[in-house]
Length: 123
Image (cartoon, rainbow, N blue to C red; front, side, top):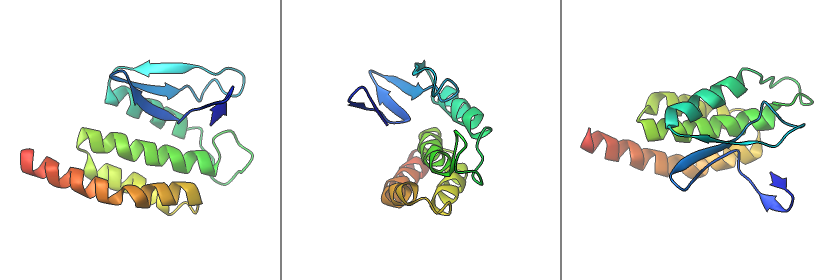
């Protein structure tokens, strides 16, 4: 998403803080929230996904946004070591039919597998 010439992701990590665009305020306000824990970020995405309507392309949380939220949720779940739930989110994104989300998740599959292997060795 581009705002005033600056490119933003839905969720990102900056200065040791997870940052998220408050989707509940769009399109009237553009607010960036600092989430101090991964759990806060997961809960924020789950709240946004409650508004999702993949069958309505005109809704605010449309199929493209929903699919990318599932990609972001998968990455956060990987950070928590919740690999089965991450796999479920990846599958939802890949099977959504949304090209950008599908390509993003498929590009991350090796990273996810590597993280799972590392987790299994250390925990």
